[in-house]
Length: 231
Image 1: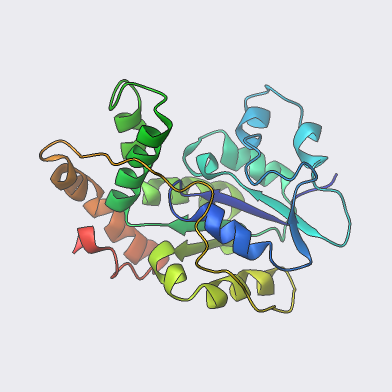
Image 2: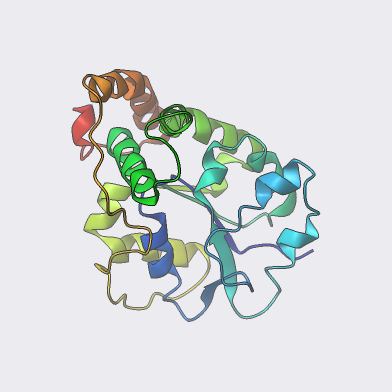
């Protein structure tokens, strides 16, 4: 059975498209054979909606370390066990985490840009609130795939030093680093619209995420000092 050489799982609105573009600048790193950054298939395999081969066949054995990055996987309860069953034992699981309040606001702006539902109802506020429960989601993934294969990064730190961050992932793939170019190019998923949160919402999110952020520091040793909304 073929398998991705790397798997990105989240978080949504944390620079995952930008980082994937940087990661695939290496001539020996690429996406699945259909060229998609996000496959949205692991949870469907887990839910028995599609056969496993629909996913694994996208990553043939060749000279390219092929992978994908679907941010929805981080919060989807069917994805971790499926990944544990399908991934090779050395496949790193990549995570980018952004200040959870800033991530929430960015997600709302993107949805406003796409104008696909009456804002902020009926779904987005509840879904986007849970999307910032990083510590719970990481614990779920670590339970299934093992903590050692998880490569967790803080978006704000990666943004400051993208070459260092990408080099570390390439090293896990057994590759010699190359020099990045166009590191400041905006990604195709940038939001265009504005969205003003209701009075009190930001404060509610700060309180709600405080324990989650504390666990990221205590359990994962992450430096979140640049998360301005959590100071």
